[in-house]
Length: 212
Image (cartoon, rainbow, N blue to C red; front, side, top):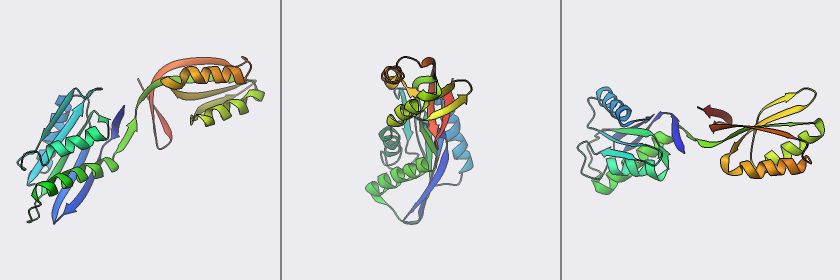
């Protein structure tokens, strides 16, 4: 599930109109409405403060507002960007300062869509998924095999301990769990000890993030 881990702000200029997109993570409709109200207060002198948000694992709540722009030219295109990027639990406000030149219906749709894309680029978007924190205990002869198996599958070592044996820890998506267990067992002739802890996790700039 892709979510906004850390919000951001992006800006574009179209025919002298400024479009400022502010993206924010939210967990409820109430949080989204509070964020939108705060942006309207912050940019009280703007021409428009258009908004869109999605909440829920299956996008159960979807709302958008054109805030005075021609119907369907702002809020819906903004919402479509969030849905198209498959982002959950996020709100975005695009603040417009009119530059004196009309953009037309198509121009507005493109500008508001582009502004949201820019805002998302300036945010930290992560892919949160279900899986396990897998601890693999092996002897020193088995370490190379374990590292090779993980590398083959694009899995990273998130921690390791070297004592009389070696413990390697990795985060494994649910759909890879059984296959990896079988591969480790086969590669080590059943000598590796495996322990699992169910987790939800993501990576940000290569660093693991764990969620309760």
